[in-house]
Length: 434
Image 1 (cartoon, rainbow, N blue to C red):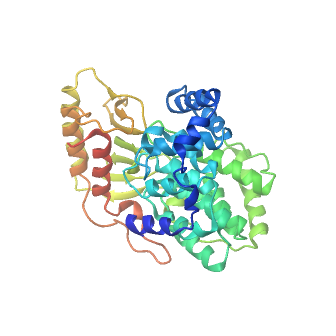
Image 2: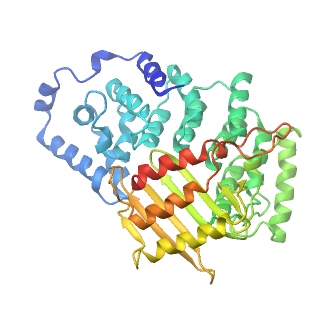
Image 3: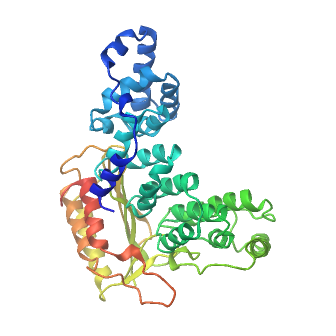
C-alpha cells in the first residue's frame, strides 16, 4: 500500500470528531489548576530532554494527568501532527494511551510520513491500543521498511487478528522473506499463539547461532532472546544456557531435548526454514564493514570479504559475488581516505542515526569511524574523506538483482533487492550527500 493510501485508510477509521482539537481548548486550559499546569510542563520537559532512564517514566506520568495533558499535547502536535517530531520518541509512544481521537488521528498521519523520525514509536503506540477497524493497516505494515514498525504491526495483529487460515498464510509467507530476526521472533510467537507451533523450530535454530558482525555478538544476543521465548512456551529448556557455546556438550544435549519437545508440540509439522533464518557462524575474512542504523531508512549490515564477496545482513548473510580484486582495491582506497582524516574518528552527537565504517588493518586490529546525529538534518556532517570512502563502498555494490539462485520452495532473498539504492538513501539521511 502506498503512503497516500495508508493515510486515506487511516482517515477512514471512525473517529469521534467532536472530541478532536478540544473545542473550547482555550477555556479548558484557563481552568486547569496552575499546579497541574506546572506538572504537565515538567513531565514534557523530562520526557524530551531528561536523563534517559527518566524519559519513559515522565511520559507515563503525563498520561495519568488525563485531559489537561492531552489538550496540551494536541496543541504541541499541531493540526496534522506536524509538531510531533519535536516531542521525541517517549512522548510519541504514549500519545495513544490518552484514548484521545485527535491524538490517534495525528499518530496515523505521521506514521504514514516516511520522513517522520519516530515512526517506530508511533507504531508501538497504535499497536498497544489497536482497534479492530485498523486491522487492514497493520497487515499492510508487515511490509514496512522499518523493523520496529513491522514488530509493532505483529503485536497489533495479536490483538485484532483472528488467526484464520488466510491470516496464518499471509503472516507465514511474510516471515519467509523477513530479513530481521527480531521481527521473525515476534511473528513466530504469534503463529504459535494461533496454533502453528511448528514455527518454533525457527527459535530452536537461533539457539545454535554463533555469528558476529565484527565485534557485535548478534548470535549470542539471538540465543538469549530465543531461549527466553522458548522458555515461556515450553517451560523446561533442559539446562540450556545461552551464555555458553551451542557446541558445549550440555547445550548440544539440551538442544536435542528441546527439539524433541517441539516435535511433540507441533505433531511433527515443521515449515521449511528460509535461508536467512538458518543458524549463522562467524565468517573469516571480512575486512571492511559498513553499519547503518537510520531512524527513517532502516538498518544495514554490510561486510566485504577478502574472497571478493559482499555479505549482507546478520546470522546467515546474503552473499553477493564481486569481480576479482574488488576488495583489495577497496582496502587501498579506504586506507588513503583514512590517512586524510588524521586522528579524528567521531563526528556529530549521539542520536538515532548512526553510520559506522570499519577497516581491518594488516595487524588484525579494526579501526572504527563513526558518524551520528539526532533526527534533525545536518548538511555535510560526514567529512570529505569519509564521503570519498562511502562513494567507493557504494560503487562496489552491484546494481539490480537479488543474487540468489532460484531454489525450489524458497522465496527470493529480499535483502538484495535494490540494495545499492536503499543503502544510498540511508547514507544520505544520516551524513548527507556525498
